[in-house]
Image (cartoon, rainbow, N blue to C red):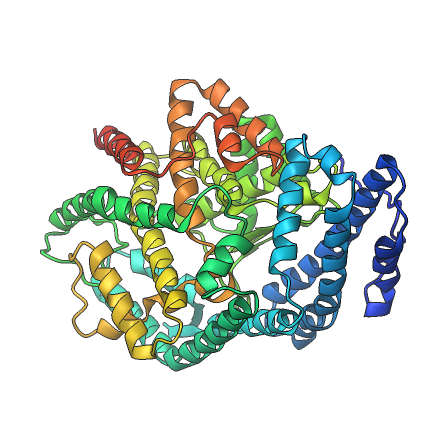
Length: 571
């Protein structure tokens, strides 16, 4: 696949963003430009879109480089410069441009087109939420939230004379030697204990600033503000609460059943905290690959077998060096696919250590990447700016669709079955965690004046509601009480988490369809991804051949389907 950077028609081809003055003339041009005809208006939109793509890609590369090496202060300064010096100056111009668009007589002429209707709806929301006094607060929140990655990246343990990242250390919790698992767990726990107050202080700072943003915008709390700011036009707070309730009633019992079966195989009445990831039959952890290059090569082959286009997407990223896969010291935790809107080829970042979970992360982020490729030809950047419920449908569906090709990594039929079973069990086990984190965030921001102690009490209460009661936390109660501190989303992207649950339901349905008619399911999946955000979320799901639905009945049916699939893997 040959990809070239598009020729710019508005912004100078050699632009380097070294200070505000390097981009200010472009904003001034857009604000002051006279628009006489519909053609003028469309060109104005295209020029604004081009500038947006360039700026977002510049910020993206600064973030990517910073997260690859958090120890390099210059990389951190480069990103902070953009968030503290450039973005605050862009905000007032964005508001002026939004108002100019909203006031244009040509806007109404385009609203019959769903893509423009959705784009203009976002613009109207931005106008509604914009407050000049929040510009500085947004910059401060962005700068503060970076500290989560830096704090997390500094965490490591010493084991057998080797310094291990938390990701590498966690992989040892799958080992069959219980003494080893216990030792490693305790080392991880003790290291986390050192930073509990730091994470509490960081979150308290973020909580206070976010609440002020909401108050400035005329809301009672940050939860209500964020529901609108995130563009949740297709579901409400009540729907989120229904999702929480449905997971408790329909998914938690299935998780408990799975855990009881694991306990029986382990010969224990209860798990210890270091038992939850080990194979209950005493088998060694799945090791699908050794290095990131092996993971990438196998993934490209696997995706090509599903659909040649899918494999070509990742092969193109490899040729362009748009991946950084291996875990290493100083690298920020987690994994992501970062869209690069101008070139149209995204970047995948992850911390691979050779585990099965890494394989799943690779195909997950690969799903996001394929989404970027399929939508890269859309005319405006705003059309490609996805709601998470759509973005995660792409990635989570790819996790499940790829399972039939995991033989690329597992030559043994037994290992292949184990991998698929682990995937389905993890999918089910993750849903209660997603719901718990989301319900916790609702409580955090509605009850914004809570104390650290009240926060801990609420988290433990939710842990009881969403848990199975099958783990013995004696002596490690504090680790359970602060386990929310490991969730990046709470610190960096508040309220961005339930989307994983909603999308998981959609992904399970996409996979269910593929078992009945693979060719049709893949075709529908690609058609949905090509839409990006030019249709409503329910319409995109419908194009993918599934429902945008998280009712109790719907969730119950999917849980039954998963139960049946797990039985087949045990046979």
